[in-house]
Image 1 (tube, helix red, strand yellow):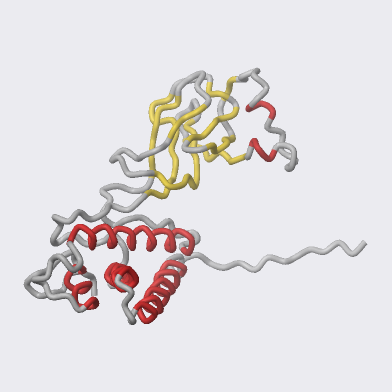
Image 2: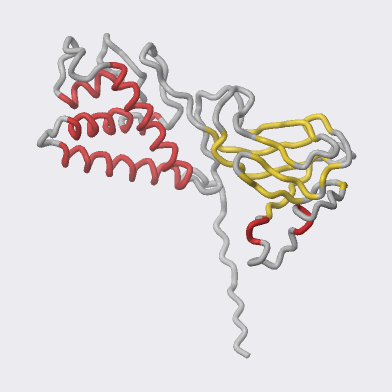
Length: 248
């Protein structure tokens, strides 16, 4: 069952479930203030996202509440090597970049591959063109990620509107203490975790004898989140590849 943030009528909201778990009367607003509960719910949402991102495999998890897909575009500028990606078009923090596509001079997007300039002395890939100062121009075919940006190689020698397309992961949309019917953008069957984790924090802060029990509940629900998102890519076929061994 999915849970909305607050439901004072039917007591089916996340806030009301936390109160029930903690043994708090709805009239005792000082025992666990709504602002504190909202903060802890958002912390739980962040933890759920971290677990989902690690477990999701080829499925790219994203908050259901986002109004668009986790794809960002920006203009390709002639002579510009580096491009910063801190947030998407709606201001959501970008957590990671999965794939980068460049629009060539014919207007066709082509995937380019990542390299790591810092591993230049370790790998067999020559990355000196990123740092030698020659700034050779052309159609980019590879990139290096650094901090919150990407560096293209070669440097583009043409302009292209929305010439860079990247696939990203981004933060959730979070709750405010004024929310009521809003629901978390994760699977509805996992919404109870957003009450379980704050319940554990409440018992921990108050040195409750029930803290160990709620720690086990947190572990159980985090395992459920991991299992749920690890099975999202059921439409992907597993392939067995032969292993070749040179016995000479």
